[in-house]
Image (cartoon, rainbow, N blue to C red; front, side, top):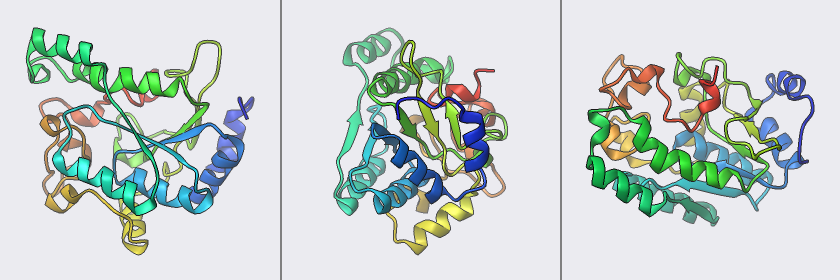
Length: 241
């Protein structure tokens, strides 16, 4: 399927179904579809999707600033499922220009948007030009400021090809963190060892830290900013309004 004419109606129908049923719908209706993989939610989706269809496409953004544990996690998932994971990297010249002009930690003085734009958004945009649909691990309770109304299926106008559509699936939109971790433990799913060190939401090493008791998970990201209201831009459609 190259396009869907009535996404709102289909989203309403899928919203009452399980993540596995949403994934099955996505995988059966789109041949050229990929899972965006970085964290615990995404590997749950990989596990679910692999049980539906073995030839799943998976990609992961390698910003060049990830924790060593995250690289080990990516390799563990690759080996556990015996799948190919496309590591999508930023354009070297653009990274070099940013670092030469502003140094390695300019985001502490400015904000994270410029660095994320070079290291994450531009590579993601290039990658999404090659697919008709993508799958993410967004949950509504991850960020009350930007993700509270995330649908399970949406028209992603932020990253679509010119004069074409890009469908985005968020099968875990209705799940909680507890449900994610219950699934991980019940199904022996690999996870990032940083979670055992107090990290909940894991991004680039300079921009991520553990969260304390009572803190929202997004407070560990870009903590020098009001992180619960921030997105790096991967899910720009959430804040496009």
